[in-house]
Length: 245
Image: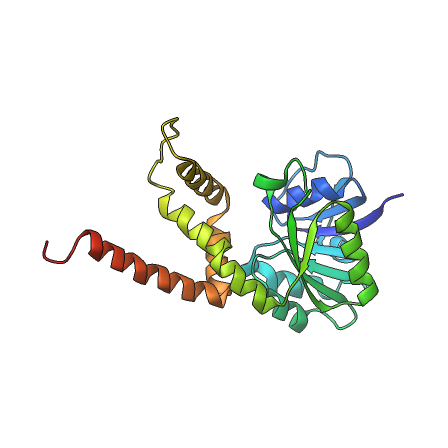
């Protein structure tokens, strides 16, 4: 019989996680929005039941983390492992430390992949680990399981993660959303760089606006990056259209 895990959140990433994990676990999913889990190995359950598993994965929007953590705190099992998959780490990890009881293990994670890049294979995809409060042998077991799937695990601090993501993932989203309404044509008469730009715009458009806003509001380094972006955009505007011209 397969072990059971709890998955809280059945959005774009939650669905991907459920499909990948059901090969090895019975996935017990809770989502506040009604859904039908047509796939074998995925069961819709109550929040309390999902939160009571030995492994619980939180795949909810960053802004919903505090309310979800407060809701599951009474139901989590002693010595269980609670993981998040947020694209910001400092603030969600602090929430988990503040809200979850001391008797659970906590691991911050950020998979650098999603439905657009990992539908076929996880091989070579990167996942960040930010150990918070977790037994070393448990952490090594989780790492070993992911390495068996050919994932690449990098252990970083929450601060290191957020600084890097502000200058990479947030910038990618910022660029993509800047051009999303330009209706960039798909033409054979284009450079490879232009094709990459269209891909960035398309992938950014597939992600929710909520995710983009959460990355800005909860990653303190993203705010600094955005201010620099505005300043440089203003300089570029003056270069192209000098005042008084």
